[in-house]
Length: 235
Image (cartoon, rainbow, N blue to C red; front, side, top):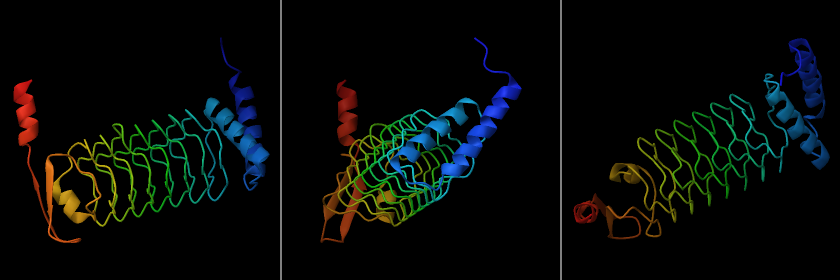
């Protein structure tokens, strides 16, 4: 079945854009729902999405939308649903995603400097080459195979975060807080990455990384793959 003629689709998109711009400043629940529905319609028409910085989309349903390059700078998407959405190369600087659900989302190379993902669901996401400098990720779920390859987490706060079974080759952890984080089964984590970050005795590490604590702040750390090698030879 064919879609509407190109001219009709263009007119529809222009009307939707006017509607969206007129309601962007509103934080009322009904208007937030209308903003989400208008965005969904614009994406379906493959229309360019306007900049949407400093707006409220709390609890908005934006699941499975192609929002590549979108500008949500300093916007509030707390409790929003973005499951399976494409936010690759998006501008998400200081955006608030408190307790949002981004499971399975694509955040490749997105700029999330100082963004707030406290207690958010980022399981099974693509965070490769993402910029998460000074981001707040306390209690966030970034595990279950999430790909953080070459992501920049300089100064990020991952206190109590779940990174179990995440992929972290080339990740920059300089100055990141990993106190109480779950790093079990993480792939490609190195001692050098941990030395550049801050972690404590409550941080759960892959079994091949061994730590001998001399004090609360002083430790020896090394890699020991003997257990993995024994299992591999036994199988």
